[in-house]
Image (tube, rainbow, N blue to C red; front, side, top):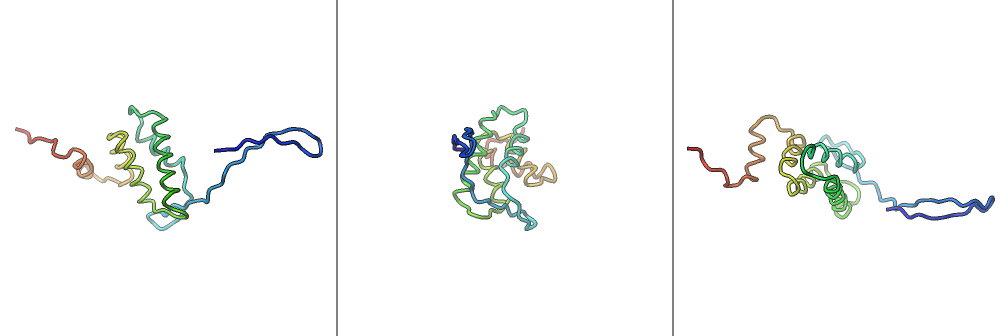
Length: 134
């Protein structure tokens, strides 16, 4: 959120506009290898857009997930967050939004190696709905 201010130069009396925004302390993401990188909102959004490609998910819904993740991150952490926690949070929101997009995101995030990994991830979602074949 930005605050718009109209100002006037004291020397030339010319008017101009400035925009001010609150600068939040930068949260670092601790990667699996221990490196620390700044949190990038756009990186989360790009991952969600790829997962939701050709799915009935609007840009507004993706933006809402990114906002929810960012808000929860700001509320729970001050300086650092583990990438594992961040990825799980994104998947939690994505699972509610679109299950196919969730599996796409999970397959990249959790680095699925083969079909068994997909089946293991789908198991809880399918529950006991699968019936044995005759």
